[in-house]
Image (cartoon, rainbow, N blue to C red; front, side, top):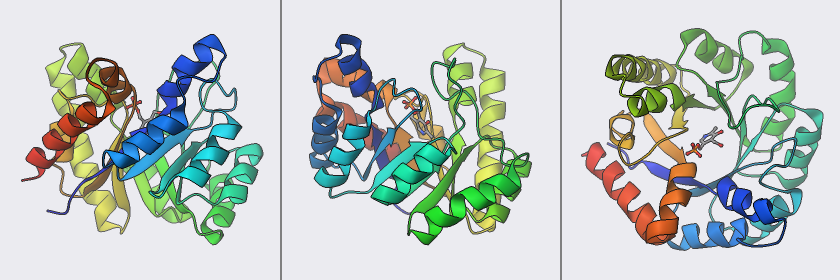
Length: 246
Ligand code: PXP
């Protein structure tokens, strides 16, 4: 099985920084450290309300990183301009609601197919790999494929929430859906990624899907880094991912 890439999401270093309004802890420093500790990529979500990552963080990440930046953004004109200015390796289109605490669901690609097709075309032309963050739903995967996305990222949140709540029937059903849909998406030629809410307890069943090429993990890893340091926190995640793969 191919090696699974670990993308480290550094948004929540910025959450802590912004809680005090100063310049520390610096998410760019976290990204550089994650790179040194073997991250395959860095993910950062520039939200419309700039609640964590700021525009200057994206500028600095583009300058500082030697590994790919996966720039998460909503499908808005403002974000498209920023992405086209920076031309990051990958752009992941996510749904965004101001009142939500985090990205709660996948994107409704099927409902907004035409707009999204027009929206992503210039990003693709600029050389960005376009990824669409969606639920494990065949309708959404078909739509993502039709609009010309190269990658889908499966939203693992429902699976992780069910695990945390001890609802193992729902958890296993969510896992089954993701398993089938990662095979299906792969059969269409889409590259499959996954992420949201993954922890040491939940990562392995998802890492074991052979079609999944990349996991993007943030909140748990940054939290764990408080206790163990970022390097050891990442090492343990990597160990679990690799073990699930063999
Ligand atoms: N992938 C996507 C598309 C996301 O929006 C997020 C959260 O910003 C993540 C992965 C990482 O989720 P978490 O921080 O819960 O690990």
